[in-house]
Image (cartoon, rainbow, N blue to C red; front, top):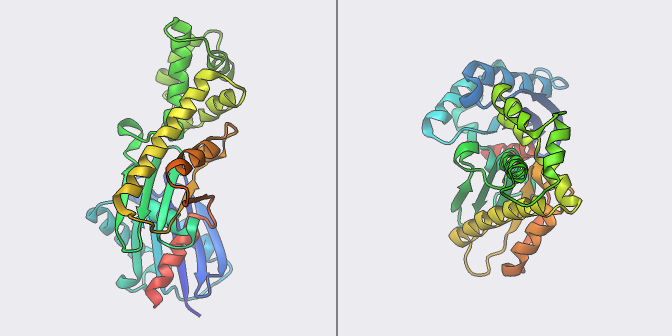
Length: 309
């Protein structure tokens, strides 16, 4: 029986699934980050190998016929070569034929896993944000995903930053009063919001730690705070703009496609998903917006199966 491995490698964790040619899952493994741009090649290799070995726990001494890796931070030719070398150094995958090794960015496998096929659009809004689409002619377009400094509008990091910025402006008297001032003060146990400087700068909060503060803004919006709601509306606007740019770029006429939304931002209580769907529906009434049918690693497995013919 042919087996393939599907790997979803991100900045926080790596997921591997073992799949047969009937799309059945026989094993699953998780490990740490495999974004070699941020953790280094050896750490990325360790995470990928650990996830693979865990997925293979129930299936010893089987032959892996193909592997697909969808990894964050992999977009250039040299990145692909680095990952190929990693795969060829891992005992479980060392003997896979070169033509059966697929390496892509993580947005593609999120699209395939989310919709179940590789045509449509994925709007990924987690720590960062990216919109990626592929049409029936194989044409692709990506918008966003430039990282927390250069972009990622609509992602959790930018929502959290906007929330803290609004709290400080409220404290200064530059903007209207907002509950975010009290919310951030209480969250960090501060005696005064001015101590936020020490928390952010001196403690050196990481990107993910800052992104984890986005629910504070989401909760404030849910409770009716107008400033927080404006921040959420701005995030929705950016995600809609990016999505429409992809639609206008590669989907023409009445071409049928779906939009899948993935990432932590969509799980908020402020109806950010519903706001997004409503905005998209105003101009694209026939387009269906869905939650993922399968996880991204499953999408990687489906792409891996294509190598088997």
